[in-house]
Image 1 (cartoon, rainbow, N blue to C red):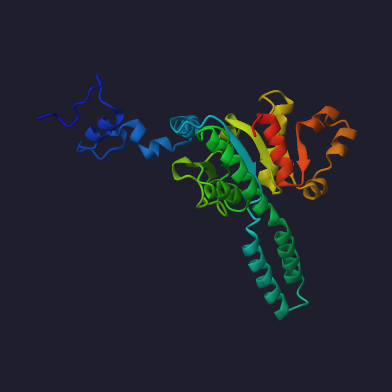
Image 2 (image 1 turned 45 degrees about the vertical axis):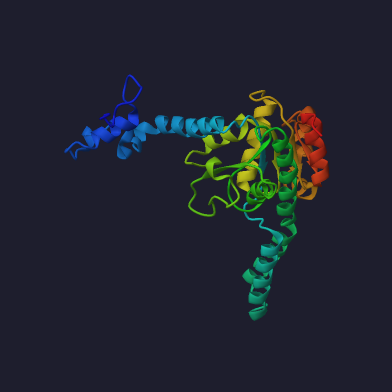
Length: 292
């Protein structure tokens, strides 16, 4: 009878040795194999090892699934689909009607109205992701695969657009105390979770052929400006960077002011384009990728 540990390998696998070690009658943590000892792996001294693991796991799995290039779509997690935004606005109005002079309720109602306006970006991201994913599928699903932060809002819309046309998409989630949960539209085997922001951002850009930034908050700005800095300093090769929504971006950031103050060069303004429609964004991407 073949021994259950017998394989074609010269040496036993790590998994086999873990199983063997578990047969021991020792309960001491010191006796456990180091790589199967969760307490040991979570020690502060092992941070460098955990950083390496967070780099390797998504990278190896994407290679195994033949992901050769990606398209990054960023955007606000708090800009939901239009129907839900309208629902929240109506709820805010109903609450305000009970106490129409309450300043906090007035403010919440105004914000809810703004979110309804911004919910159009959910619809736009979903549509743009559909077009990109159809192109990806024409390349056997290996190129131009949608990747998002994996959460709600605009991120969900992009993953949803890929799913609408039967394509794959990636989600790079991160553990947060609030708000961040994997949306339902990510391809399950390409849904990853991170502890370290820095490693997550490296994965966003490793395979990127373009970055689309929809309106969003601190996280969107962080990811956008890191990308622009890396392109500006030649740390990565230039890729199209498209900012969706001229009204939002012009109110939020005065790029011309940065140039006029000598903080950036005039040529740095060519590192990105600001557009107002899916058609404009799609034209820029097709031209860069030389696809139809």
